Image (cartoon, rainbow, N blue to C red):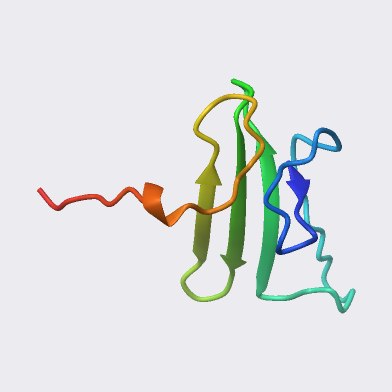
Length: 92
């Protein structure tokens, strides 16, 4: 994964990916917060790319909100949203 700094960046970068993300918030440091938001590009093991918006909320009931957009073919780095390709799930 690599952090997506520009909200208008829709093409995954070629390099700079790391395998894990860690957010340190030691007690008493003044850096503690109950939520974290990150926008990331992911490179998957099959060569596909994705972009995700991740929002973690701690305290009380813990929540993870995740929006993801995945390229349809391995190697395709264009991850711009296409409303014509929205998949909707039908109830059973």
